[in-house]
Image 1: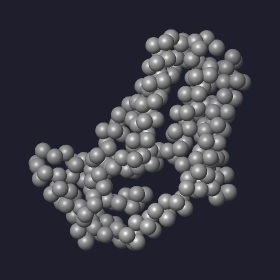
Image 2 (image 1 turned 90 degrees about the vertical axis):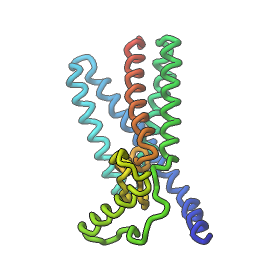
Image 3 (image 1 turned 180 degrees about the vertical axis):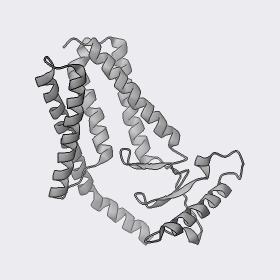
Length: 234
């Protein structure tokens, strides 16, 4: 009970920090798109498409690098999931106020549905359980300053543990048998693939399909946005 109270107290104290990170992420998104708009404004008529893409990539790297340097200098932090969310929101607002008037009803319904599914998928990924191992033997206590050999031995022991938890079938996939400790989530994840900062969660056995569907959704939505932009006569 005391541990649960301490956890809730930490969550309440984290709200001001979370709001500040979201504010920083929102400003980073606005600054990024403003810098990218300057490329199309000054180089759209006299430059080729390849040169514009190269300049856009260079400007994007420059803005992100300077933004990270200023954040470290000022001691402030951003939120990667909030950055992804505000990117989706910015593209949707740009579509609604500028592009929407020039596209067909079918494309309008399709694109708005895709954006809604992206936001729903992002929220689902943030809340999803990647496959946290609730009960592990004493050998799987949180590693602190262990050597590389000790960590490797720990991973092997956890893989044996996971094989017993996954129906003990020879047909189980490698993903289902692998258990790894995530230092970001401070938990052992069954079927651990990687920790995704952009989605703010580990990718494991229980949310791997959701992760792949979300990536596919981003690709489809971007393709629909480009199609709507090409059909629109600004």
